[in-house]
Amino acid sequence: MDSGRPRRRLWHVEGARTLRSVRGATIIAAFAVGIGLLIMLFGEPYQVRLAVAAYINLILVLGLQIFMGNANVANLAHPGFMGLGAYLTSIFAVPLVIKKTLIPNAPFGLGEVQLGVVSSFVAAVSITGIIAALTGLVLVRLSGIAATILTLAILVIIHGVFVHWVDLFRGTQAFYGIPKVAGIETMMIATALVILVARLFKDSRIGVQLRASATNMLAAEAMGVNIRALRLIAWVLGGVVCGIAGALYAYYLGTVNARAFYFHAAFLTLAMHILGGMRSVTGAVVGVALISVAMELIRHLESGPVILGAQLPDLFGLGSLMLGVIIVLVMCLRSDGLMGGLELDEVLDRHWKRWRRGG
Image 1: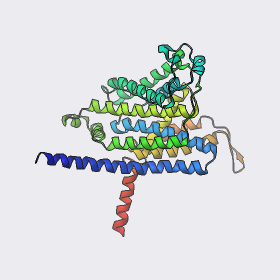
Image 2: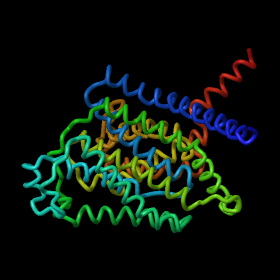
Image 3: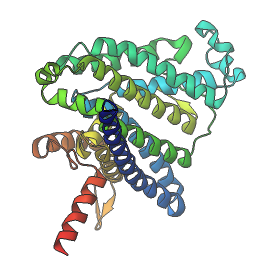
Image 4: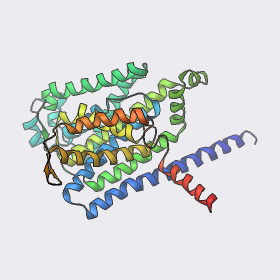
């Protein structure tokens, strides 16, 4: 009888933690989806397109946060996994008539294969997860700057495969003919689910141990924490989420090009991640929202607008410059980002308690 009591207490603790995580994720998702609903109801068509791009970037940043935010290892490979999800979805979902024109010499008989929309999505994300697992087996053996350099190498290798394996990925030419079945509604649902996954992972025992190992690796190993296994789980889960972002990207645009999954995407989403706060799921939402708005304003300035009667010169490249400035300033002035390690529900709880004490 006594042996069962600790288990019930442990289950009670784990259950309460899970419910708290679900509650927190629901609040964050409601905030993220609420913005999309307002844009969908009252925004112009181009604003809806900007919102869709922001949701795709948010899913990508959440995939980055699952590994980088918990393991504290800088990751630059996430656009590569996004590209894998996009290209694999395209290869499976494009109609055979179009595919015979695009990749007539496709290997492994893929030129004769066509799957449904859902089946293509599942197959693409699954293969992306397998590739993430294979690369992760090497990555988890490294740490610090060596691991970061390896993630950069993974991105370069994946991009090189896209560009040079012409028979399968069409090189620098666009891969088109993909069914356009995803809209802003799909993006909002997918974003809410990914937020839930990211928050549950962060608050899970694996996430807590992974963050503890990032703070003090020797102490975590002394307590019996299998750091390599935890990092591998986070790496694969993050890669799968990035693959989901790529699949949704393909289903929304209907066309895929290798240039979309290289350095610009890496630094854009990295800036979003750093600005919001690497250790926070809410930080991903805040960072994506702020930089998405800022980049749109910067694009307006790049075209040389007229302000107060003065014609400004064209400032091409200002967006890339500002991304670098944002990363440098945040790392120097607030290295934990705007949210630090806090979540939206935790901030609201703090203000609620202060208000009750003040009342």
